[in-house]
Image (cartoon, rainbow, N blue to C red):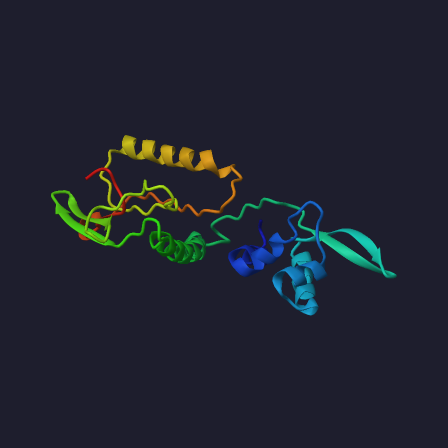
Length: 216
């Protein structure tokens, strides 16, 4: 992609979702977009015309309905490359981290408060390798996730001290683990957001280990 105005559509999550509506093989109409996204017909029409001017939409076919032709539009591509010259990686991280963070926080809180096996508090443990924050039961015992009926959920974070080869091996394992489950079509939706990154300034940070673990 070489057009800055077209790249702006991909920078704007709301606009991109409107374009995504037309990335289906059969295409769609202005009226269908308006109904799905809660827009007026005029607002939906203006968006479609904008996408057409930017060559992000094209007319797939025209259908006769009650004596008039209704245009069916489709995005001609389902993959786009946008270079860093036209899109900010930092902005995209902000756009994706923000909604994920809100969803993760809200749903993790709900899962941890489930009546079958709730997390009732935190154990603070100071060890030679740092501070550990471990989920706990009401009696102060360590909480365990293996009670039948407990919702499947994971919250773990903390610093790792790895040689380069080990860090790359972990990276590969995480990619493989995620991909192993991506293609499954089970009954319930889950959200997994994995981040592994080198830390340039870890020496100035007090990073606790947090979440369930068998390590300690």
